[in-house]
Length: 585
Image (cartoon, rainbow, N blue to C red; front, side, top):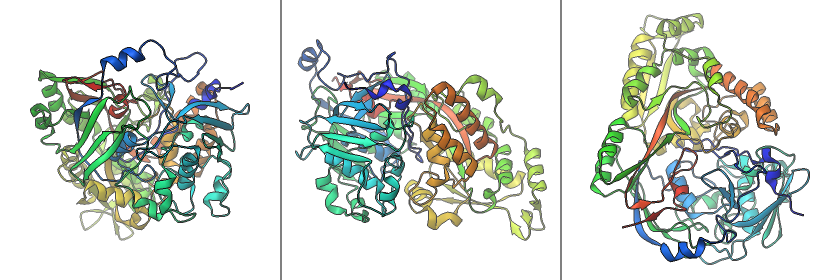
C-alpha cells in the first residue's frame, strides 16, 4: 500500500534558495490533518467543475508584465535573477508544486510514495506528458537533471538540492559515474534515495525537469560547460514556450500547446518587458504594461489605488532588502567593524523616509512568513538601534582610530569600504547619502562607491566571486523567500559549504559551530522542536552582524482589471497565480 510522504509531515518542510534578488523555497503549513497531498488540482480527480470550466473559459489574451531587469539566463541550473526565474518557472515543470494554500499538488508526476524509513521517495510520472518540442517527459530526464547539478564540473547554485542524496559526494567528487541517489526504475518511475530522513528532503525532489535529449547533447560527465550555452533558448514542459527574446528589453512567451493541463494557464501570450523604475507607473496607467508585481514605492501605491482600471493585491513580503558585507576580506571581515556599521546605519530614518508607513525594520534573517518567527522572539533579539557614538566607540576599541589623513586607520591601513551600487535605483538614491553622512562624515570611514549594472554585481558577488573577493566590501540587493521553513534561508546563505563562485553564501560568512547547528537542525522532524533552534541560529547571525537586513515591507501587485482570478501572497507569486488567472476583455 502506498504511503504518502506527507504522512511524515515534517518531511514536507521546504528548503529555500536564497538569491541575490532572487529567491528560496517553500514550506507552507498543510491544511489537511493527515498532511496528504491534494490531488486533482492539476489532474482529473476532482469532479463536477472541469466540463463547466472548459466550456466557460478558453485560452486567450496578452498580458504584459513590467520588470526592472532581464538578464537572459533562462537555464534552470544556472539562473540567479528573480526576473529570469519567472521565465524558468513558466517554461519548465517540476514533479510537483504547491497550490495557493500550501498543499502539494502533482505537476509532471501523477502520484508518489515513500519508504517506511523516510529515506526513499518514488514518483510515478504522467505518461502523456511531453516537452514543448513533442518529446516525452520521462524519469530519465529527471535523473539527468539531478546528475547535471551534481556533476563535478557544475558551477551553478543548485547543487544543494542534490547533496543529501545517496552517493552524491562520490559522484560530485569525480570518484564514480554511478549515482544511486536518483534512479529511473522504468521510463515513468523515478526513485530518490536520501542518506537519512531529513525534514527538507521533499523540497529537494522538485528541481525543474530539463530534457536530456536537448541539454544533454552539450554535456558529458565532468564537463557541463556546454549546458550554459543553452541559457537563452529554453526547452521545457511548462505552460509556455519562449518565442522571442531581446536582451535587456523583453521576453515574449506563448502558451505551450503541448502543455499537460488544458484548463490551466489560460493566458495565451505573456510579454515580460523591461521597464524603468522612474516610468513604470506611467507604463501601467497608459496600458502599455498590464502587471507590476512586488511594488513598494508609496507614491506608486497611492497612484494605483486612485486609478479606476487598476486592481491591487497586497500582502506581507516574504523577504527583505539587505546589505551584504564581505565577511572574508578587508575590514568588514571583522565582527566589530560590521557591528559598528550596523549601529551607524539609521534604518528607522530610511524606512520612515522611503516607505512612509509601508515597511518596518527587522534584525533577523527570516521571512516574515516563517514559522520560526514569533512576536515574542522578535522583541527579544538584539537590535541595532541607531547610535553613532556607540559605533565610534566600537571602532576605537578595535583599534580603528582617526589618523592624520582624517580617516580611521590601524597599523597603517585605512578603513575603506568598497560599496557596489546600481545606477538609477531609487532606494540607493536614498541610502547612499545616508551612508556618506553617517559612515563617511560621522565615523570618518573612507567610502569608495562604485556603480555597476545589476548583472555585473551578480558576476562580482556570485558567478565569479572567488576571483573578486578583494574587490568589494558591501552591496545592497533584495530577496524573495519562497519558504515558510527557515532552513534554506540560513543554510543556503550562511553555511560555509556554500562559499565560492556560483554559490549562495555571497557574504562568505564562515562559522563552523553554526554550520553544525544548521546541519543538526535539518534533522529535527518536529516543527515545534525546531523553532527554538532556528531562533538561536538567527540570534547568532544577528549578533555577528553577518549581514544587515534593511527593511521588511508590504508588497503590492498592480494589475489591469482585464486580468481576473489573479490571487497572490508572499509565498505565491504572480507566476504561480497564472495557473488559474485569465484575461477577460
